Length: 255
Image (cartoon, rainbow, N blue to C red; front, top):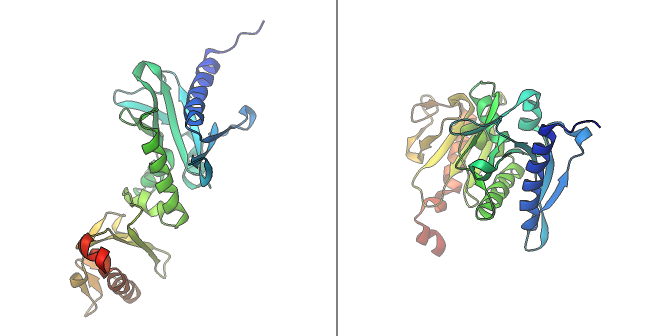
C-alpha cells in the first residue's frame, strides 16, 4: 500500500484547524481543491449578525515546524508574489504550530505592497508570534480585516499598505494622481490639528502638514516638499473641506 506523506497529514491538520475556528464563529469557508491550489487554500467570507457581508479574503495555510523562526514564522512567497500582492482578494498567511500555541496570521498582501514601495523583493511573509488567531482574538481579527477591505473598496488601501499606515473607519482620506500618474494621499484624523501627506515621490513616508505650511509663490510647496500647481491647489481644497474634522471632537459633534 502506498504511504501517505507526513506533510499531507500536517497540512490537512492545519487547514482543518483554521476552517474549524472560522466556522465556529459563523464565517463562510470554502476550501480550494488541491488540484487548483496555487498559493490559496481557503476563501473566507465574513458574516456579521448572521448575515453574509461583502468582505472576503483568501488564505494560505501552513503547518509544521519548517516555517519556524526565533520570533515567529516565515512563509515562503515563491512565485505567488504578484498574485498575493495584486489579486482581487487580499491574501493572508496562517501558520498552525500547536507547540507554540496554535494559529498565527499575517497579511501577505500588505507586506508585499510595503516591500514594493521600498523597491524590495519579499522572499517570505513574516508571521509574528504576537499575531495569535484563536477564539479570544478572532473578533479583533475580523474587524481588522473588514476595515482593511473597506479601504480597498475606497481605492486607497494599496497606498496605506505601501506607506505602512492604517486608516481608521472615520478618517478622511482623499486620493489624488498627478499628470505623471504619481499618486498622493491626504489623510485627516479626527481632532488632529494636522493632516498627513503620503506621496509617491517621498517613498510614502508620512509627512505631517498644516494649511499654514502651504505656499504657492514663488514655487508651490508645503513645508520642504515641492509641489506642482495642481498638487498645491488640490491640497488647499483638502484643507478647506476638512477644517471641521480638525476641530476638537466635541466641537465637531456640535457643528
